[in-house]
Image 1 (spheres, rainbow, N blue to C red):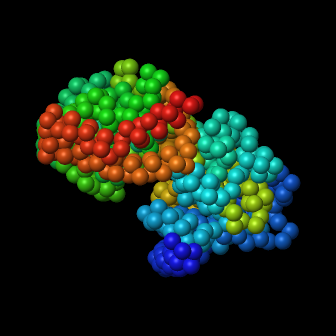
Image 2: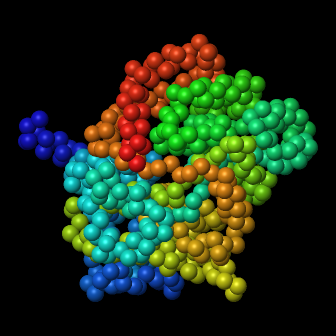
Length: 527
């Protein structure tokens, strides 16, 4: 393409990108008043490296970020408070989570990208691609000189390997959490077990028998034997493949791989995956798996969960997220079966913050973000503003302040802390656990700790070159769609699994799955 034509294309893309940003910002901000944060609370007035906040001369930079809850990030009270306390102001271009992938692509393609990218979920492939192009700058030296809190946290979490690209550079910063299950867990209705005099199942056959009893024996005791749904899944955030850990497969959902017997296995082409599909088919055939599990979205599952006592089990990050805080005590994570393991995350979620080559003040930017890796700054990011979003009790515990920013905890956290919508650059504060009074959060944290003890080693970080990342991007998208389609077709008996399995494998081969597997296996062998 001639340079003049390419310039025209870039201008057109930029125009489209800016139009999308304006539309989403109007949709997000309509009817919302800005919330002032002049109250006293936790501050971030401190030095990071040789830079001290607040700045003597206020500075404004540009940021691309995911919206928090119902608020544009610029109107988030905690974010506004941080601006006031540091003297660093941000011209924020916000994206709704549902539009994130499209807007990121348009932004980088148009050359209209911002100084920093915040809470935008940069994938490993995006970090490699835009790092190699020079759009994302290497952060290694900046971390060394201006981020003492981050350096300490990365050492504590042994996290350097998870944020380092194949060329040895670091292009984005992580959220650092305590280890927990790496995928939504299966919550089983303990009240129904008790009603029917059943024990927690210890293998797949017992789980099947429990589901049969849930369906046939009026498990909720309301006199209607037909309103129980033993198991439900969704087509987006909580697919039925999250049952795989109970087949002894510590699957990494990002690439459908698992480390088994010290080998990297691509699960969808394995014999155990065929066994899994056969089991799911059996559940579906007998009405034990919701008929809508391959089409409905997570928000539909949640609407059903709060509508009444109808769910026997479901996948989610927490029981109260599906059934509400009034009934989550009835649910516990199903214990991994004997000799089984559960996939556990490293606690490191990369891609939460990056600096572009357009940033004229990368040193100040790094010092600014470093504060969120201190205990004080992380409390501000996770809990918000003291005495506005949370309060400290006389015994040292803390609790949320409901009302101004939300009548429930989920809404409050999304609207008034930095936790909403996407992972944020920070370290999980110890105070989150030591001072926790929220009974639902405490229950969930205890359940996660119980499961982590039975967990597999975290899936390793795989450094994949830019060229291989391009291959993966081309192959993986089509392969993933086909795999999900095949599971649904086999489970609903549109296809017979025994007759179609070899054709399924042959189709994957034609789509380039062998090349994809080799990339993963070579990257693992190079660890």
